Length: 107
Length: 123
Image (tube, rainbow over the protein chains, first blue to last red):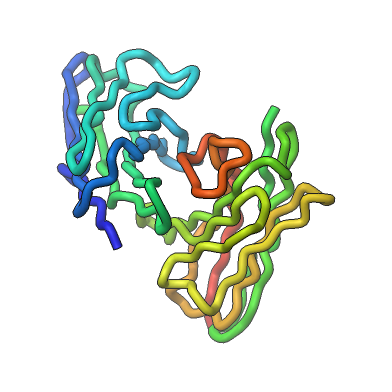
């Protein structure tokens, strides 16, 4: 099965910073990659699908890129409400594996 | 609006069984693939099972294969997860989630999630 590895596992940044989270697949998955945000105590929320398509209602400071095995989630200007754990997920085929998560905090 | 409401969680002894339900509303349930995802306390998300809109095939994580069964009743707009031979490793919040694509058998990203139901396996 394809493994999904995120880096870093945790991240602390200042408000206004540009933040980048990386997700690597152990085999190519084309662009079948989604990003989710899970705020503390809340349900996961879809941010990006097809590697770079922003889900409706998601702020434009979030963006995604990549194809094949290497993917990136970028927050262009970090806001206090972005404190959350972020997960990537492959969906080219079952199993629909998630990355281990990246916990983002405000410095 | 789309609503997914899970129920059926609780405390069960190791080796026991439990059936979870997910009541769906606000969208065409019979046209939507559905997933179960779990999250152990303080841990990350783990995909558990997928059932396409037409029930043509069932997909499972290796960790639950042979013990869990996903099913659906389109007449009741309800998704189920029958869980047998439970172990302490199955302790988690179980979410049902809706597949993004309609009338699609192969799975996609998950655009709506329920609030989850807690399953605790303990003696």
